[in-house]
Length: 222
Image (cartoon, rainbow, N blue to C red):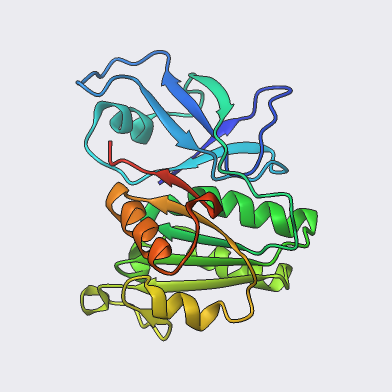
């Protein structure tokens, strides 16, 4: 689910950053507490702040899901360094798993809006198309930005009711090399479940990529 909040007057952030969101009037409590860190899935030029999350049965998410318009939240931020590098001569390669796509939705929308010269690839792994947040929008961005390429892949199409003609299987060396031909000295950005991020780090190291050229953000299932 995605949730939209009125943007505080004067609040500025860079695409890919996050904020600490607190429920100020929470009445439902559990051991996880009333505060979570969320990456802004909205881009800096968009009028509202938008976050997106997988829904689980926690007090925080129950409150969000059932809240009427006007829910008050506290916001601390922006925080984080998961932002696009300045050297446009080096391509950006985004690798996302599941809801980890949120910073890349923000960064890709911003790049198209600001007409940034960076070459960008977004590799996006999900089990099924039904599970892939923003997939239609991310595909449409290719029309708005000739420097952007979107490569979604599905790992469990046997359980899907939707047709799929794109890539299948996990994101691996062969998939990256097939799509990144001609990409010189890219900087890699990783976001997804901790196990995926760790696995991608190891894979990139095995491909000879320096960890100095890898930026990552882990998304926990709280």
